[in-house]
Length: 224
Image (cartoon, rainbow, N blue to C red; front, side, top):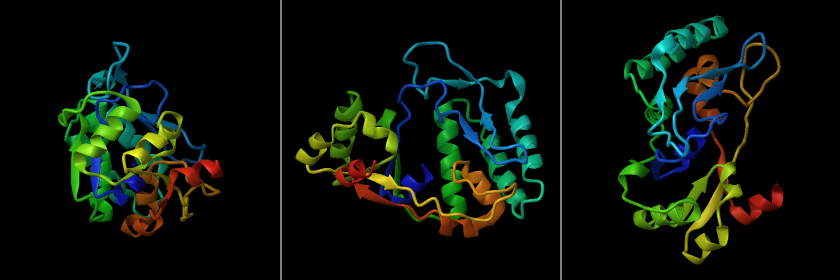
């Protein structure tokens, strides 16, 4: 999401999308001497079709303190560990109680830390009054914003009807992840971990690593 946000003039938190167990919505991977374990935020998942804005964090086990301690130990020798822990602590201090709010607070904290000037505007889909689902709703949001370009992650290839966007004059582009290596703790480099790893190891200079562009959907599908 950080790569996507960096490219956007307007970024929309899709906070009324359905919560999916086992997705990245409430968990991230970190790098430790024992591998790349998941840090998972426990949730109350009570209803089929529940959105991430309706999915509340489970506060019974003091997960915030436990996650901070796990990060403190995992990155004990990282040069910018304290800056990374400061970001996490600041987000936790906001006490977001839904997965949507926690996700938004986290990505916006990283955006501020790295000093990205974009996006110029940040919105929430639940507050836009746009009905529908899938392609229909995403396109309606783009139209409401007057967008000519929609940049998305790779998961959208499973449901977007690209030709519908083309017909409406909206160019769909997929993130072209660069996966630039940077100094990491604990062995061989892996790009498949939280941006907190980048902060801990590189500090604000990590901004130079976040440099992915985007490619037109037809070119993307030909590649994959």
